[in-house]
Each structure stands twice: as C-alpha cells, then as structure tokens.
Length: 238
Image (cartoon, rainbow, N blue to C red):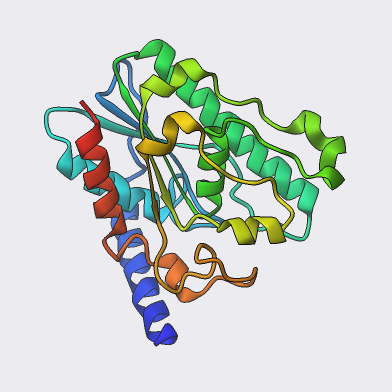
C-alpha cells in the first residue's frame, strides 16, 4: 500500500513539474498592492522551488477560489536544506527562513495595509511559518549559548494584517522534542486563523518517532488538502 502511495505521489509530482516548467515561475510582487499576498515556505529539498509543489498546488486552488481579488505569492528565501547531521548549521538555515518570512510580512503590511496576508508552509517550511508567528521561541537549556541567534517575535501590530496561516505536514511536538528543537506553537493572536493538515500515516506529523518520512508525507499537493486550505483562506479574506 505504501509503495502504491509513493508511486501515485511521484507520478503526480512529475506531472505537476512538467506544467510548472511550461508555465514559468510563480508570480512575484509587482508595483501596487495585491488583494491577497501569500508568503509560502517550501519543504526540505522540495521539487519546484521557490515555493515547492505543495505551495504551487495551494496557490492555484486559492486563485481559483478568490474572485474579484488579485492573488500574489512570494517564496520564503531560505535553503530548505537536508543537512540534519549539522544541528547548528541546520538551525541557522531555519532561522534564515523565519527572519525572511517576518521581513516580508512587515514589508507587505507597511506598503499595503489593506492586503490580506496569508502565511503558509509545508514540512520544514511549516516549522519556519510556525516560529515566524510564535509569541516566543524558548531555546532548550543545552543550546542557550545560541540564544542570541533566535529571531525576535513578530510585533503584535502585524497580527491584524495576517488573515490566515496554513500548515501542511508540520512536524509533531514529539518529533520536535526528539530532535532537540524549541517547542513550536503559533502565537495567541493566530490560533483562530491557523489550519493544519496531517495525512493519516504521515510519520512526520502524526506523533511517530523521528525517522525517514513515509510516502504519505508527499501527498499534500494531490490529496485535496491544498484545496481545503484554499477554502479556509477564501472564507477569511475580506
């Protein structure tokens, strides 16, 4: 069953990649303000950068559901690397993503105060997105010497500009504890705006011990979750 799921996912990814190559890169911000601005962080070494297959699937679904408003998408600029054996280096990469996501949110809010900002991420990108809107990041005691590298929380004044946070395949709290990362929770102002998706059998998000991801972890772009997320966002943008 797992082998069949993997074959389906790989086939779908290959098909979507062909479409992406033919249609060019995702739209980037142009002069003026969009009705909805998506800031999306791709997953670890995910195909179709800069926003990945999951981001592209979500962006297309949202564009189909938001009528009368322009939708633009920008990628969180970070490596989305798989250098898990280098804990410090990997943490620096994630921090780069958090800071870039926060920088983009601040910039959009200042330039375009009436734009609905949507923050999203898949897998490692969901980690970046979650920390970006956390009330605080509590560094584990054994890593306190790196406290100065941790990003500051996003100012409370930006919460009103973020209409939704969408997270796909977010590593579970058990997974995060096992790898020694800080606890992960969106800030209080975002809890009612946040939706999370975890495919049954996805060991990254279902509370399983740390290990190589199961085939279900790559199904978010094809199992309907990006459509459900787009429906959630469409109801929240005004």
